[in-house]
Image (cartoon, rainbow, N blue to C red; front, side, top):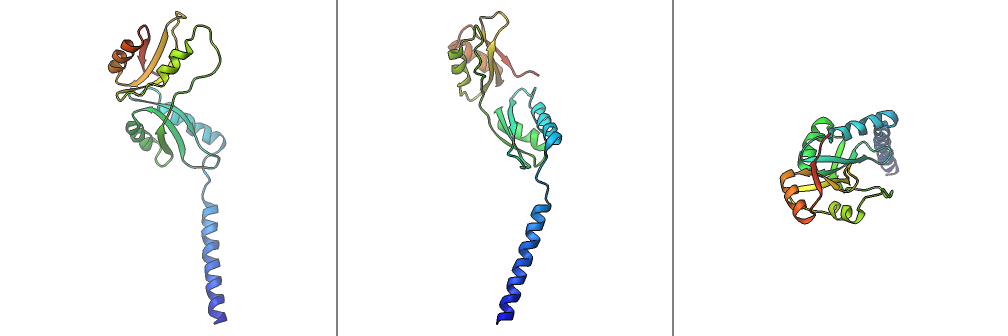
Amino acid sequence: MDIALTGRLVATLSVLAIACGAAAAQSAGPSGQELADLQQAIYQAGVGPATWHVNTVGANPGHRVQRVEVIGDLQAARRVLDQRFPGQTEVVRGHITSDLVYRRGHDYELEGELQGLDQPGFQVFQTGLAPDGHTTTVGVVGDLQAARVYINAHYPGTIVHGNAP
């Protein structure tokens, strides 16, 4: 009986050793310049499409899958990113962030309201100040015409533009 128990223990330890060795042999994911290049390529893939925009790209150290925060049409973003970077991205809904540096002329209260809009046909990805120094600009992804109608009705005097490279 001791021999059978010892044999099972040795077999179990052998299986564990093989599994641990296989796990250790797997690549922990890109790092250094390779990681920077991958993240830049993912970000660039989300510059220009009319219905979505990459907000941020990142991953925990050693992870193979990059978490991609997207503003706009998540399904379209997933299709494109899965095709270009198979198995390397996880697309999630992003939220616009604004820097906290005070810039003369910005209406931060208005920009905050605009950034918080949650409309079914479009999503705000950027707010800013027009070159005239007085007018607030709003960048959107999705239905540009619907965005213009809604924003101009509720926030007159803003300039609404689409996602452009």
